[in-house]
Length: 83
Image 1 (cartoon, rainbow, N blue to C red):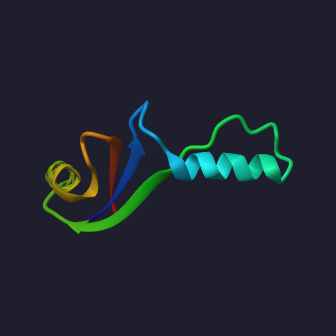
Image 2 (image 1 turned 45 degrees about the horizontal axis):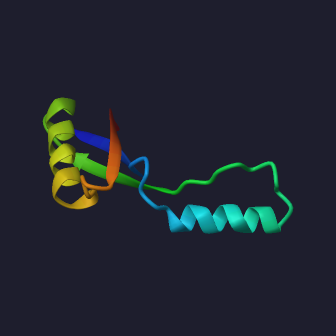
């Protein structure tokens, strides 16, 4: 069976986000003063073959721990659905 896995990776609270800060500054320079904060995050969309949803979730969790995230600075959310 094929599954689509989406991993959303965000910086933990208190971790500097220079890209978000620059985006906020530029939005203000462009006249969008009503924007109060801008944060960046990464999304990984994976197509994964597996026996069932639970096995795919476990595999994607391992991927996050080994490659896709840095547990010191990132939080992440995994969503898996059958294709």
